[in-house]
Image 1 (tube, rainbow, N blue to C red):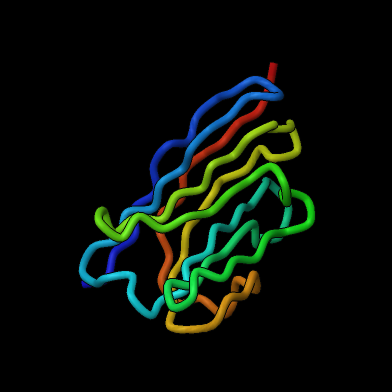
Image 2 (cartoon, rainbow, N blue to C red):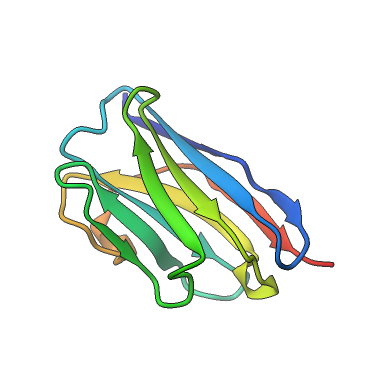
Length: 123
């Protein structure tokens, strides 16, 4: 059974860093695209970053480009999201998702989702 589990969320001050991990089980990440998405209260889910295991091509939302980095750890079957220079507007539940598609930040293109991890940026 394909399963995704996020970890690494928490409370951090503005300007701080967090590293989120998405552990995949029941399948290998080969040929999958994996995306990170977030949803703040009252807002639509939005794409943050995605990566293709085929060519390791990446896409980033404009709001996080230069601050966030997505990467694949094939040995651990995990996708990481390094988040630096965090801002209060980054506060949201962060989800990872996977599917056999090309790189896209359109959340409806992904079928398989994790349960999410809360990220709160506040002083």
